[in-house]
Amino acid sequence: MGNPQNVVSNIYRNPMNLREFFDNLTPEQIEDGNRKQFDENKRVYKEFVTAYKFGNCSLCSLPLTEFISFKPCFHWFLRPHGIKKKHFQKYLSTPIGFFQFDSYIRWIANLNSPYKNINDLKCEMNPTKIIEYTIRYKNIEWSVSIGKTDRQGHPDTKNANMPHFHIQMKVDNKIFIRFNDFHIPFSNEDIFTLRSMEEAPDKVVWRNTFGEGMSILEDDEAFDQLDKLMTRTDDPENATFNTGTLVQMPEGETMDGETLSKAFKESKETRIPVRHILKKYFPQASFMTEITPGDSVPEISKRSPRK
Image 1 (cartoon, rainbow, N blue to C red):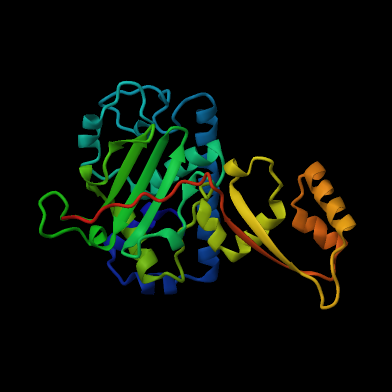
Image 2 (cartoon, helix red, strand yellow):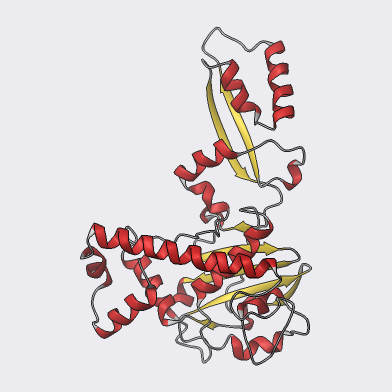
């Protein structure tokens, strides 16, 4: 989609139907915009990883453990030394950029362990929410909630009548920031992106580049790729994924015990999932594999409705 900020400014100068705007883009413009956006994502992500390796924040250049009250930054959510909830009061009363914040915490979580620290499964979302997920990083857990009424704003309230989102933050499994402590306003760019996804869902897709979570299991293409890349583990309680495979032999045929024993031994030595080895020994069999989140994946924290 190219640089969202440039597109937003053009839309604001020349108001138009977003659906019409995207329908008027040529395939070449879309491909060029996507390529430029991906290249930009790679550049920013590389800067992020490099800074992280030195213990610094790529946004403000401060150490991730350092907190300066007049320099708000996303790394505040890592709870640097000395920060308290009251310091977020002014920071979260103005737009911080939801989609930039989303990328930041996803990238942080995936540096620790890809996929398994991000539960963004749509099938586990509250159906009244537009966006809902939970992300874990070391001893910190963030949960994001955007309800349909949050998206529009609550007209009957004083501090939440604008479009906004909610964050819950836990440290050592204790709540540090509650969902309803802050109503964080969306930026103009956030609103543009949300509108684009709502009005042109077949044209605009929210991709979490370098920040993929468990929702990857709901992508058929990614699902097949994951199955090919998975390895066996001797620590299933901390595994990223759980798998179960149903094997069916042709009528009248069975698997002999000696070959099965050989396959399981080979799987343990090579760490190749036994289902792939069985395909080699029993090519005539049909296989059906189910991949589900591992036991260590966090549950999505639910927000109680407003009273």
